[in-house]
Image (cartoon, rainbow, N blue to C red; front, top):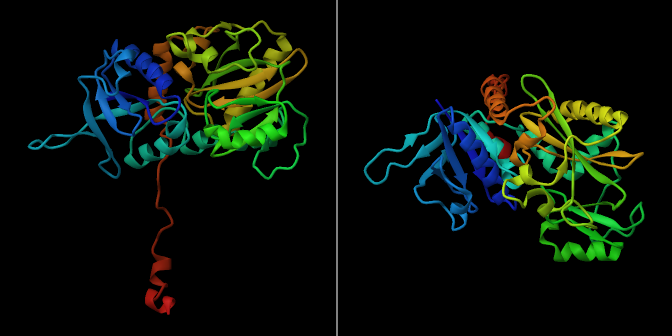
Length: 367
């Protein structure tokens, strides 16, 4: 059997997903049978050579690629088309490593399709992916678990007032990374952004903007038991920048791996201990599966949960330095979890026909 690495997808984080996917593909190719599956911006699937480089995607589908289709049902899976005379051939895969950031690759859409196709995959379940992608729902879960969080409000055009003072930070309700985030001075400007910022059209979460808070991050692996990474303090490339933005995180040639950072972060032991405690709690609350990254906001006296990334950039391979855990080991853990702990098994238990036998005539019910 062969492991597949699936990356790309119709999402703003498409390019970052390619980098993560190629990193995983190249690492696995050293010791395993592996194929690369590129999910194009238009939603098509193609098989790409394991030696493909990032620049080959600049003009679309790399040369040497072949078309694939994803089929659902008992014989579901990825199929290579056989052309006019040949028969389509199923690609045998024992696990699909998901390197799909944002959009339908991280919100449960792709996970649901793979469940219906009967393909084992890494990363979040449908429910875990949907919760992680919805900043409003995730914030509500954090608060319900009695964990620290900044107040959040769903912003719509008819909101007359906010329960906290400005300035405000606006975030797409359904979105990953820092794409689409805005910092504004007042409510009138915030509401105007709803019409001008396309990333907010599916929902907007507004929070108090706190320039005194800095970012902290920790990653965790769920298999065979929860394993925590070192705590990282990302650094901003631009002095005086309002937030840790997309450029800070990803522009540098190797995704999150090349972003500036303090690792391990120099923190008071009480703060580090609290972050680890919260990470373990969120692993249970969210049902973390695979590798995830939890982002915090902090200063010398305060600590808040910000968000969770259920398929983080570069699969957070750079964070596992205390104790050291190599990228190959991380990938093998993900694959073993996908094989041994499937994200979902459908069951028709309870559908015993009793209701159907007593239903009578449907036509009579319509009369």
